[in-house]
Length: 102
Image 1 (cartoon, helix red, strand yellow):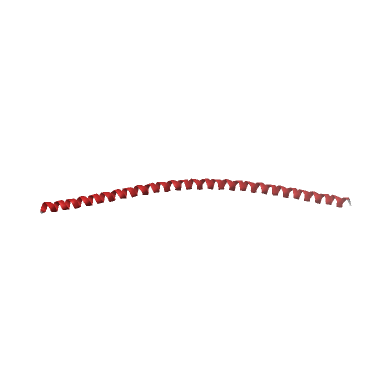
Image 2: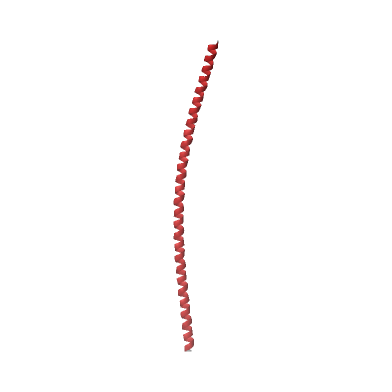
């Protein structure tokens, strides 16, 4: 009878140790999961910062493109004005040449 009690005590002690080890493993898994979550949050924050920087850079590039487009349009308008002036001068010269030849 004493042996049965001793065996039962040993079994209960082994069960208790197994539960303690299981609890310790679960706590470690929770800590690992929390660390992984923190790492993911840090990665997300880093990606969001990089995304924001890229958006700002794209806005800067778009603004520069718009300015260059406006400058090109102004230059084109000036060239058209100069072309009209040159054509008018040619026409006047031709009329002057015709007037001299008659």
